[in-house]
Length: 132
Image (cartoon, rainbow, N blue to C red; front, side, top):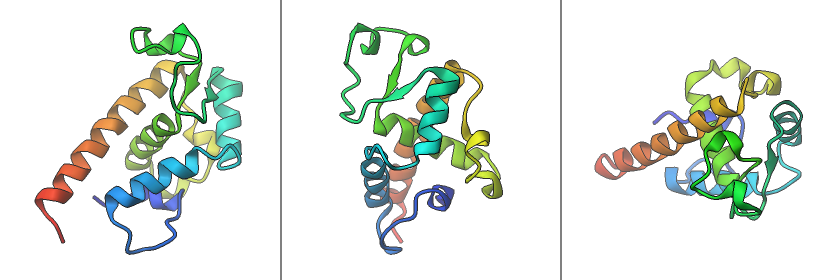
């Protein structure tokens, strides 16, 4: 997988494995001071705030049984999945433009999170079956 996400989240080591890079991204996104413009835009436009603990269960609205449209927080992993999906569907030249990365609705955000989660799984499986 050509990971265009590296245009947004630069790895510390270019020889890092894909799985290692994905873990690195999730840890960077857990930092409240990382990508503050994007996180602020998600809050202002959609009312979504970061849950740095990543447990997603600050109240019943975060429960897996509740439809994503009603959720008020996202975990670092969910933000990673969103960005992974967006990085695959947007031209590289606009990836650093936060206003272009902010979805129009919560529904769009959560759908992209789901697609990004599947994209990560697929990418890691392909990497295992076709090692370099």
